[in-house]
Length: 593
Picture (cartoon, rainbow, N blue to C red):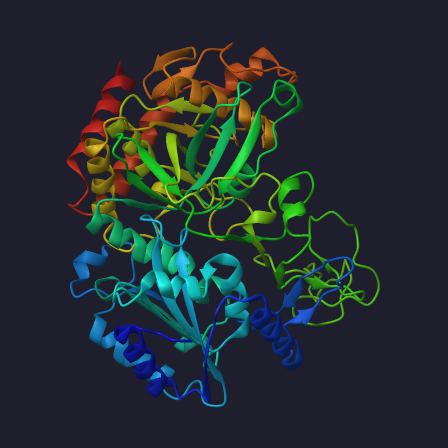
């Protein structure tokens, strides 16, 4: 492969001199090379070929038992000034981080190959897109990057001689969890990851580049990198409007991105177009509106709980050309996971650790042994999603009509409410929170704040990030309307009030009506909520009293909430924008009425 880029070539030579690979292999994005790499990885046991009749193009991988998830305590933002990283990020000075990690990288690829993966986040050549080059000693990483990003010769051609690319270095090294480091150098446009093989830590185009580095670049360059899904709602008249939505974990983000309309609305002609399930890059266009792309080309989703009821589109998506990680491997080389569509994987199955396993197994303390790891994953091409948007590869993206924020609250937040202004909407996003569930580590019911679902992924001071949101709204001539939703409100007996899943389209429909200046609403201290008859309930039999409870606003509860929000803002230090402090005080005044 001919490379006319001195910066790229010199950097690869420098990293090779550090890691000492036996060979350097350039990834050209071709099917022939991918197939050869699959065969090589199958021969070494790095991946296992699955049943090609039942799961064509699918493969299986197990990570090290101590390497199964993102490692927040080993993830660092490395800026010259600690204050630039902010109070919510782990920080290391760049010189210290480079020196420490270089000792872990030194000679780590001896006896291995270094794969050079040129990739584009976003359509190749789009003004939205960013180019990166990942150096890795893992075929698993190569195969996943071929799914998750645009890889190959076209990317190098688009880069040309430019030095403007993200330098990504990864090595499995010894997979030592104590020496595991995920290092981001925003000022150098560089990412280093060592001693991990788990996708979230080593697919460096994903959270590392697309959010942590990109959020820093976005602030510098005047755009936005957000932890958001993008979906289009096609109305009966054929017009499509797009929303971007942010949710903390365990709030049904991927399910919403692939939503299937309920029969009552589907029969009217409504349809959903999935643009992205995880990340949105958003820019101001000449029309004064915010436009968004999905920088990814695939899905890296959690498998347990994915089934034909929760997400039938995801089930269709992962039936072929998918990499499964840390699920149960059945004897017939198919896969299985908890809360999936099948009751049992049959005799002779092995769990995610490779041990003989069957449902109902318990350890010596009587605790159930799970077959699939709770964070087991699928990696699948975006184009296989039945609702994949035809605009995914459009270089300009789609215009955003509304931003939706959400959390998991048992009582406080109504089903939906609309912010009264852009700054109020930023306040809503900045204070969004979820209550811990029984499945999460920590005290059940404890409120965890996660502004814009970006707290673990913001590559600089989160309070400055909130100010960037304020500033973007100032620049926009036609900013999107902002809404907050809560699918998880419960009654006094602990039962969910709202059926969720496809029915959520009824709520999105109202939000889009409001974005167009339509839709019936009533003003409350927290914002505008739908009137009891504002949502289209065709085909859904929901008692009027239930709807009233779903939309109720309890002033006393919200007053307590303002105290919690103030404590959170205080924890972020003096950088918190004065606009948000003003919004907090305005909310208190409205609640006092």
